[in-house]
Length: 422
Image (cartoon, rainbow, N blue to C red):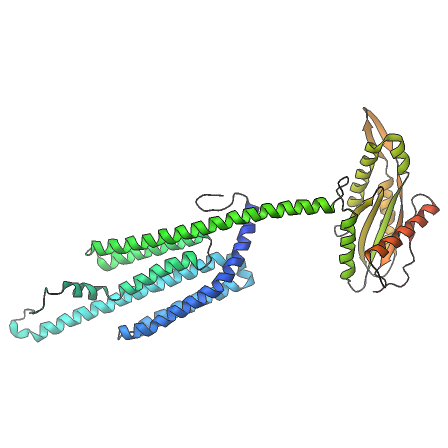
């Protein structure tokens, strides 16, 4: 994990985490963004009472709300699902830019008000030789300072809240939230410089400091939260991996790596539950011919190698969606699905499987080549049929296989399907 960006070094792991983070972001933003927009709109009522020139502020506020809500709705669309961090980041920056625009608009109105007031005083005191006479000059210099700033304290607090909103309530990934926070801080710094023109260094320093402090505190909170989230994700992946390993171990044959009897019964049960109209499934019960003499003559180690190679050949002969497993001993089961109601497809596949199994197997024993030749008898059970269960399907295929054994080596027999339910 990168200590700065918190990104995982493993790209696959990072993609998996981001998919989960996007889900979290969707759940969080669907509550926080509408609620925040409602609060932002509500402040317009106070704004109307504070400034008689409130129309431009209302237009700006409405523009911000429409933009943020539009971006929020855009982030909900499936086609933009993987860009949710960028879209919500843009929503935060749009809100910040609009707030800074309201700050400058308020500053302009305050300046006009200040100039207009002084002009009136000058005209009213024209009898004094054109010199401005203010009986209260110097008594309350802070009033002049407050007028000069207009409503900036209000919008500065809005920017501070926006920083915390970006880091903690949008559900953004930390690196995106940090980029937004720094851009808002830079925008606030530039706005302070443009407004004060260097005349109020202390005020400007205070504003920059508090904005920096907001970024630092909110950033630390977001960093800590995402770090814990990623560590929890790693822990869950570790537990999931161990569980998958245990499941694979429980469902796989240790010798061939194919599905074991338990897994085959589970898959067959699932197939019976989900029937596709116009499709016939088939279970191919495979029993090796001539395997017992190999075991008796050459030992179990050679026999195990023959079983392993046979499993590989079965897997290489089947389609990608076909299922193969080992029932036990030298018995294998193949589950296939074919369109139509003809038995020729399963029978043709069974012939190919016998050809693959019957190819000589060359092994090396004590430095000498050993050639093993086995074949197979295959019984086929077509399904679905009335009352079909995993056990009855396998039993019918097993019965057909024994009939094939009685006819000789390398024989395929399809059991009586009775009445297929298509």
